[in-house]
Length: 328
Ligand code: PCA
Image (cartoon, rainbow, N blue to C red; front, side, top):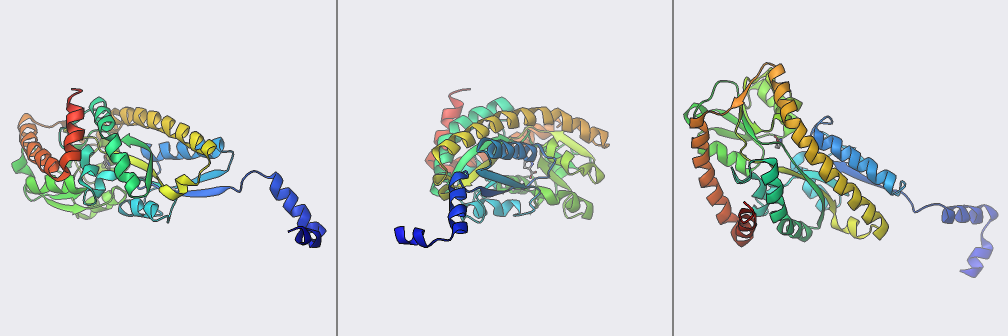
């Protein structure tokens, strides 16, 4: 080592001295997100990325890729797990086929308000974090979508009115709901729904006011029924090996940014609910609570789906639900 140093040219020595004086080499993390750039989850993700870049003084720079531009929603989780990207956001209920407990946040009428959904999340957190760790994923933060309601291009007052309708689904739960209501499910990413409605590939969906608003669905659809069926959640996760290599100091900074994003994201989801109902109305849609008949028929279907989920999710599912119900 000594002799090598002695052999170095003046320029090389100067470069080495400069490198030693600089902060740690900057790392860039790519963060795919599935929803449009103007969606509140995406805006929150961008604020989180800025917080990390500033907090770590540029040692970790996060680049957000919205609208499924880097990976489509369904591929984001795998991309993080396998290290194709360092970090990303995914609707975990889209992966119930890997582990049924990922569907805890999409069980019909189990936790149909923001308050209840936060309590349900607290009950599920240990199980979900552990299931993610097993898949080489470290959870940073999670934010709910606003309550889910039904979109149609006609008036619908009962389950019978839904017969044969082409229904856009986004996870197993939504596909199952379509089956049980006599509709025909087709899986379509949120980023693609306006096109699907415009071309007639789909003519209905269950989603938040937020997604209908983001996708300007009033161009094709006419009715939104408030059902408050569930509040599914998006999860921002980092690759486990990448996380293990982050310094303790930077882990603290990232956790601080994640705590902020948790709070801000929830507040935006709450505020966005009414804002987007108003926006759908301005677009020309009728926005109203579902009829009593439709609600009671949907609740019956909800009981069937809850039992199916509990059976699939086994002891872990049972543990989540009983911990949550003890708080009610
Ligand atoms: N929007 C997303 C998931 C839930 C929601 O409100 C979607 O429709 O894909």
